[in-house]
Length: 336
Image 1: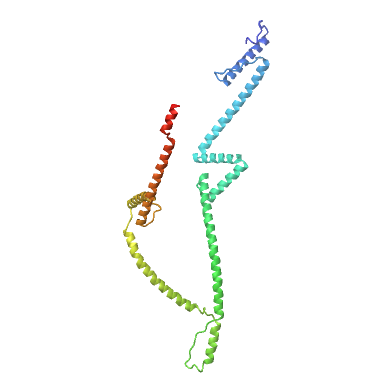
Image 2: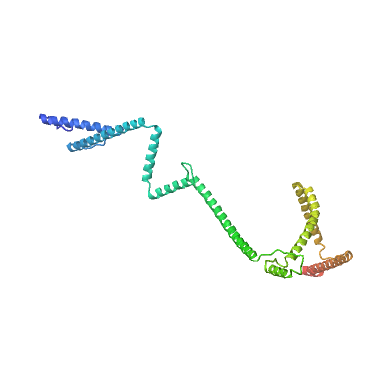
């Protein structure tokens, strides 16, 4: 109140009432600001005048009205929720809440999101998936359907090929049947008196010649095939008789890993011996195969070696004599 009063005393009753009212309003504003700001954070300093007081009073009144309205709505919602909980079971309430949440989510989706959600729902229905399928399970089921579709397409292609083949064979059989039906083969009839029925036999032979006949070489081919089958059957029996002892011996001689390892070591040792023998034989390369001729060749080589050695020694001695000074000449040089 001291910030509103002047240093001089106030003697007017109206001014005193105005000052008391202003002090009361400022006290209300201070209390309201203290409620709105935390305890460790005081309100910022501001100018305290009539305009500021008027604005703060209007703001406080609006804030109080909003708080009262919000409290009223909260109280109304709590009472409504209590009544709903009393009227319907908890499961129905959860179902209704879930449906409302899902509806709000669906309404807030974009066009692409709605399309994707619809596609997933249709796919899960087509695949008879559980109520809450995952994208991984849907993808695996879709891949299995793709593989089944590929197998069915291959099966259909094979069926088409078989159908076309059966149709072609059926047409060929139909043509053959029509030809046979068009030219039936009459049964041969014999009469006791051939002289009286010669004309009838001629007519029958003529009709038979006009009917269906197999290939002339079919009988010969059949006989040749039968002979070949008999020959091959006998040959197969002989080969089976020859092969059965070998099979029995192979079965009896079972080879183990240890035997294979032993044989491998023996083979490696033989290879090493072969290398050593090859190294020894390399010194005798160029010799004839006859022993006497080889000895003679060896003796000739030894003689040639001795001659070469003697020649080397003589050449070496000549070099030494040529490079070594004589005694008389050396004495003369010394006296000089």
